[in-house]
Image (cartoon, rainbow, N blue to C red; front, top):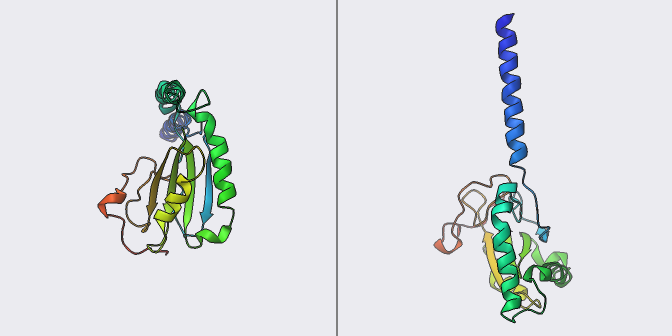
Length: 185
């Protein structure tokens, strides 16, 4: 009986410790950066991590965000005092421009907008015209830069961090490591 009680207490303490640790590692969109799906037509494509970070990562990033956000204005390249103020209107313009749901048949693409940078992440068949998507995103007013992180094979390393495995290695889209034909199991 005593052994059962000790084992139960140990398991309870372990569960409490894991729970407290997990609470400290909560992933959250602390800065409310725009993050949304343009399409979800590629079966089993992992959802990108997007702008989700832990509290520690957020605190680490705070100074950088303030500095980078105001640099644009100080350099007279922006009319708004912080480049992050452009993000919501950019996201709205992207949603409006890509409102046709059939445009991305067979692809799952999520968009993150941070500091006038647009990140397109997800999965698409090899035949998907990534360059055309990039050009259209770059043509959105106030977009400074576009990063394309679209994989073709969900079985290999993807070119972006995922919500399911945020600490897993990221494949390099330029290395060809993810150029296998698209597979949807």
